[in-house]
Length: 196
Image (cartoon, rainbow, N blue to C red; front, side, top):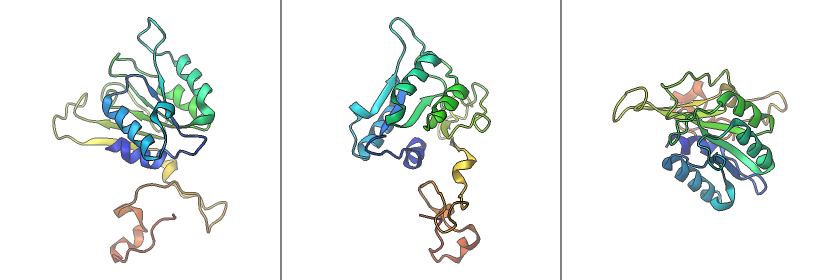
């Protein structure tokens, strides 16, 4: 669910940039979420899902291979969404390097940290990760019914009024209780929603 909520804000495809780069053995819930997001925007998953896999005879996907795929598809990609640790092989991806490289190509980068949270050190803010999602029932030992977590870098919550105060730069997101003017929220008048 958190991946769907995050992709609702961060997967913003266009006719020329609608691909999502993911790993070849993404956890099924991730694969199906990505596929349904692509379909929901009217694109064909067979064309828009770019899956990164290991070379023949290898089990791990080298960072160099990932960067090469990013290079090949940067001009047509809307989002990079990879696991911190690949559940099938146990490979820990170089989150810091991959994030920085993809962002240098103008791409948004998200991470599924279900197998990384509580398992390896993570520095999402320091690594400038755009967004991430994880569960707590695996390596945090929270058990059935436990909470999930998500992260969005603070820069995505900042409204930029510097160019035009009447039309600030604002990332679309799903809104609810915290979607409106915090100072007047208790007025219960359904006005002063944050910029459209």
